[in-house]
Length: 328
Image 1: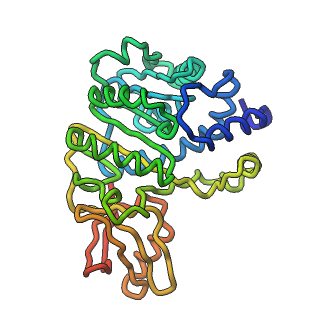
Image 2: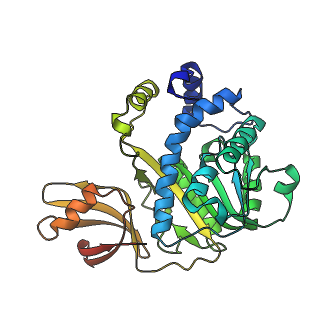
């Protein structure tokens, strides 16, 4: 599949389905061609979000455990292939794909086998999904607003079996807060790697913080904004290529989190004399400021940086007087 072969009618139909975002028992893949069109366009864009998530996990010093990977609700297999590219296929014993659509599972399986010919790639069987066999890394991507109630019990059982979990979703308020509720339910048993820098209940969900949601922004690869194929696709699909909002949750049973770090939620707002940001750390949510005159380098960095905004601050009340960006 390449840009000259795109089926715009198919992409328009898929776009409408994604925007509906309601639970359904029906699969929306009608042919392998649907998945190929998706993988080149919408799927690649989700891959950029996964790149941002994996950037942050590496920044925090996390690496996936050795052992089998399960990409659940795999679609075209974007999440699984992104993880394999980042950490290397040799880091894992095997990868299995599952989707309620056999078309999707087959596409993900075949695409991964072509790219990583030496890796043990399989499709997950019903027996495997119902078993107690340990899972090294469970991957879930962009499914939360489409899940029927019956699927959540299956996910919970898979989390129990998993040593680590990485779940990436759109950055909408509704989906992000739903993911935060799952985080609070699971955190007592499986430590949170990110985005949180603490093990307390999610402060976004506390009374009085209803207007907030835990979301972040990724960036497309260099050159995309000047690529005529991507520009045409974005105009047709009604997508802003510069904006990649996402939310995510990463859990790991062996993780021991540092307690002195902060995570900036969303984007900092810049005004002429200062920048304002929503900060999350072990003490909760707080709106903090960085004065341009007092800290011009940090003021500029918060405006231009494309790295995950994870910092160790020094503060005087609600004013940040200094800070060091976390390095891997």
